[in-house]
Length: 191
Image (cartoon, rainbow, N blue to C red):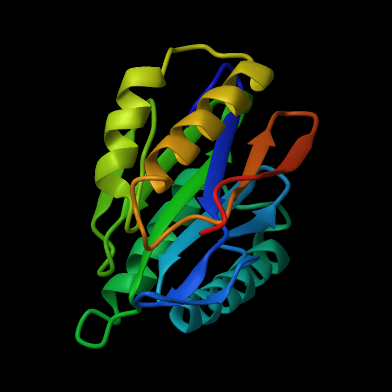
């Protein structure tokens, strides 16, 4: 979700195989650089493999260009990597969030073969996406400050994962501003 020169990216903490819970502290949001994060919902092994390959590609870009990748460029890279595996895809739905030039927030999501969906307010993915759309649409306001953005994202996440038996066990919320990154753990239902 986008705020005023900031963004928030959040995920739940449950890792499961169908209805069986495997772990309750699973990390789905990964840092690419200080102003760029990616959230990977879907199959855990594919998410970890895709993240490792993306870090590799970003490091090669840093060596060649001597700068960090812009969020728009990174989104195109992720889309191309997913599309080149379209016949045996990674079972992941990435959410990309970053601060671009002049600290303008950029968010997008894509399906498992790399079809991008750009937005100016919020994007969602994963098993709770239907209820997340409703919660985010009702709570979103433009130009929120970081603290208000944290409250909004946390309330939307908790409201939606409480309605989904395949998600939950709290959440990780990252608030990224031009000067700092705040990571907070939100406690939720543990059943």
